[in-house]
Length: 282
Length: 309
Image 1 (cartoon, one colour):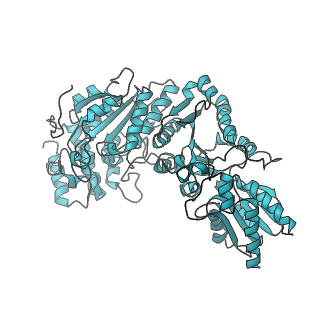
Image 2 (image 1 turned 30 degrees about the vertical axis):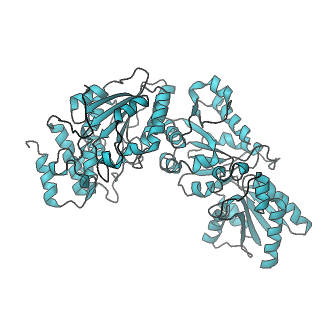
Image 3 (image 1 turned 90 degrees about the vertical axis):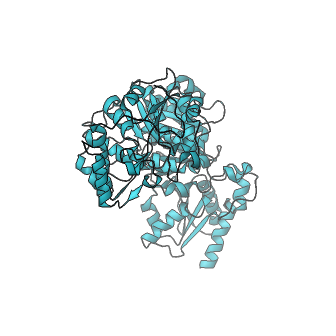
């Protein structure tokens, strides 16, 4: 599974299947309906969240607070369109809700809120909070002697935050094997390339040094993600999955393009171009 | 007060399996008994205030009641966004125990004082703020934290603070405590200042000035009815070991202004001015320098009465 990734390389991923395209079309629905959205940051996340919710997480969409469920926190809350799409397709709320994104009465805001959206475990958006909450959840599960797994998905810009590393040290101290963190490593943050804004390399070495069993995968390869996420990788330590991804994945003109981190008022022809690129037979 | 508070966490933990303690690199030996008796509910984390608030939020989301303890200014100022987002936005029952509220750490200087803690925590929706005046009150207050559904910031005095709530029974979050009756003036105070307010009222009595003392152990939600009733006094005086801006005096003024209930001679707010202290010494010395010891409080009230009469 391990293969070398350099900071300059993007993964050579398999083509998107219909499930991945459908989720991306839902993201475009929200971008269109809400006239805004973190498109690039959401498109890079789709396969990570898809694999967690489709294949790994024990959850019950008809009983979102089921005590025995596994927990998934989207710590990079600005990638919420990907999470909303995944939750909608699992039946947490109707798919049509996507088009109400950011509308006054909508449950779906620009960042996810626990009190409003079934299936959202923590309100995020301020960066660098999710891993600490995940540590608390993982310890809680341990006290209660439940085999709950806790997943925390972070951004590569987000991990600039010092609080992430406070949480990392604590997760390691407590040997939280039931905690799996993922970094959506799309190599771009708001201003530009992570390598230039604040280079986190050597990233895998950092996480290993902080006590995580760390693997690197192609973050758009569903098979690789399944292998990395299906079981905890460390025997007495937390797991870190560094998912190499492409910002804006699936929409060629938005891929690796910093200006698509967040977009407002996307013209109709560009919305149509996205649907065309993501059509079932495209 | 501090010792009582932490001992109560241990006592509550024995009664209630939801109680968890989280410290941030406290002194050696803190809650050793709890640590040995229930190691799965005692967590001494590193110097990482942001992290422990998030961790406490995660525990609370699973039904636990975490009591988080470190120095007051670090548990408020250092991790403010975590308080706002992780605790208050989620409205979780996490208890923040802040050692050394106010000027307790006078010898350690401005980095360790907590003189805007009430201001910054009171602007957070869902936050409750409690500043007991002595160890007895602390012991009566702590059991009420088990089933209070919101985050609570507990502002601790130094320890060895004089007993001012003698004879009081029970504790209700959000309720004022009448410490002294008075006909002319109503002094409203919180925390360890309430004892000093009583002493000041006694000094004023010698001059024929009748001052009542209303102790507000809960600063938020403030006892609105009691504040409005106090509006019938000639003068309301607020006394606090905190900046005037955003503290108890501000909260009392807000209620009186919003309800057109201003006392005849207005409000006199006694607290800290907008500056960092220039001196070290002890808490008592700094309070004296700021005119917040009983003689200073009484003097300020006499002057206000002279000017406003």
